Amino acid sequence: FNIPPNKKVIVTYELFGNISSMKIYFAGAIRGGREDAEFYFNIIHYLEKFGVVLTEHVGSTELSEKGEVSRTDNDIFQRDLNWLQSADVVVAEVSTPSLGVGYELGIAEKLKIPVLCLYRPIKGKRLSAMINGNEKFQCRAYQGFDEAKTHINNFLKQEQKT
Image (cartoon, rainbow, N blue to C red; front, side):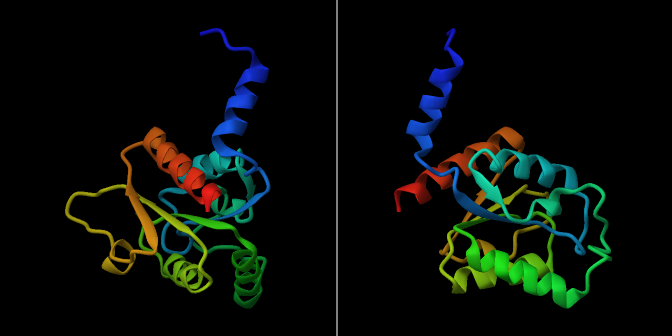
């Protein structure tokens, strides 16, 4: 098909409605491990098509397991809590276990913020039952970036309807 660029915008609008104003809180491991930082970056970049990602720094490959060393832990906590309280949805990558991400998900549940948890199945490991067993979270396994994008699309379309 040879679709003019303006038709693609119309299709996107019809598919997702007006979600460009959506505030998205992305959660991913920082002090728990940075093995997936590049993947976080790619997810965040994709999420930016749908709204404002409040926590885009989580995808920075310059951020180490030490976290943001220029801020105090309390500053980070207060800032992130404010962002979380203002979020419309939470998208979390939970393949790398992280106390911080688990805490953020618990707060999101308490605030009744819709949550999508993405994870890669890893042989010999299982996703925490506190995450996977929580019926308020949508937990979706993925093998690659395209599959993760499909889960994100489905989640955001569903949340746009509610």
